[in-house]
Image 1 (tube, rainbow, N blue to C red):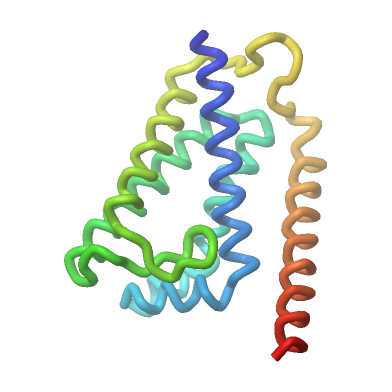
Image 2: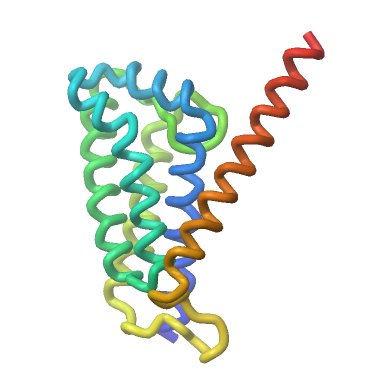
Length: 177
């Protein structure tokens, strides 16, 4: 049973961090604006602009590369950093804080973000506490080392396809105006 829980948790982590990284890349201007709204020191903002999506993608790459525990540890570190930043930002911005995480909202309720981070931290903890082999039934396990680069290429392809679709959508909206 623990293997099934860990397997589900690793899927949730990979999906969430892939979505977060892709959203930042696809909606880059909104991500940049959210960072600026946080009023971080300029060097921190410059590193975070590309560093955060890269770190999120690294979590996904570790999981896809068969190192789920490494990915979960990275996810926990990111979640801890995000939560500390969120705590600090909430004191200056109030309940609604700037967010470039997912979707179209430019601000989110900090309480919901804390709950989301806690749920993801529980998933990461389940992966870390789970068995080394996350294949619950001997059928569909995590990709091994040989599948790492194909998995990365697929992820890049999906992000590129999403970017093309976003550009097509933006062009269609401009024509309607």
